[in-house]
Length: 355
Image 1 (tube, rainbow, N blue to C red):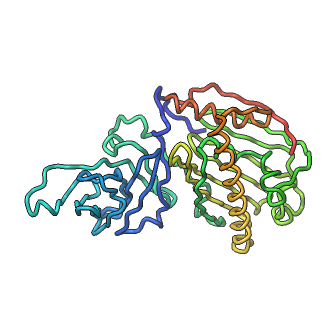
Image 2 (image 1 turned 45 degrees about the vertical axis):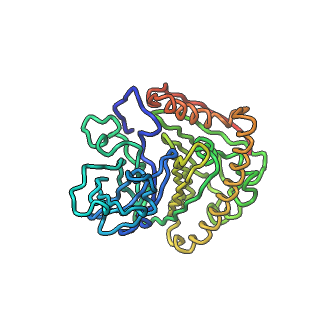
Image 3 (image 1 turned 120 degrees about the vertical axis):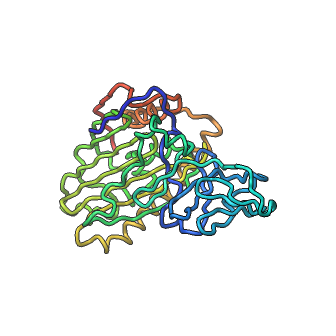
């Protein structure tokens, strides 16, 4: 198991979050993004490297994301100020050929991995310091992305709810029998058991005894009714991974990255990674259809939940099945208080519930 040096101060803003899909960020293009209500202007510099500047021109506060990119430099749409990949103002049209005084926009730390552009709300200069405690934190690796024998589908959706409620939904089994009736599970009053573990800033759930009740595609996913190896996981601060192994060539992984645009809006990037052997290509339209349907239903129920929370406050009545959520909340709350969740004591619970 990977171990990290433990620091006393850690916040939600120390982590990497997706701000764009790499193929969507073309040269000579600027994209507007949000992260913790911070506006970002994202573009590629003259070398093709992704850059994220504060979405504010230093001159008269026009949004840089409305500008244009020419030869790797960002031109403000209001008065034409030009910024390079370091955020430095390299030309001010109204000053003619005179040497501009040193001016520099705020530039955030950016990297690319698995065809996603990641940023964090840390000044790029701070990120480059060797002593930066956040250097050990890296973007999450998408399992089996572009691996031989595996196929993948990528989706993006806006959820009108916060990150905590989103990630809890993504690893919550009981709701599936009611929100996703027939598409993914129906209510049968069947008992499920699971082991829930909190360790190193992660929550891992291992289920026992699942064989069926997978919705309209059960015939394809597990036609022989074999025991299903099913695990769910949450990785701080915003990642969930749901992993189903049905047989040697029947494996399905859902990786969701919940990006906080604001306190009540979350952009979710979903990777559906699967290995169905010879069926990989033929299964794609079925998988995409089912995923889009399920996500649309989750968006609707989470939207309703947020409206109720805004009116009455966040007061939850927990059951044994909610141990998973309680552990997740303990990690998210530690980060909100500036604490490193890896210092939380290890916890393990065996639970049972009915679906």
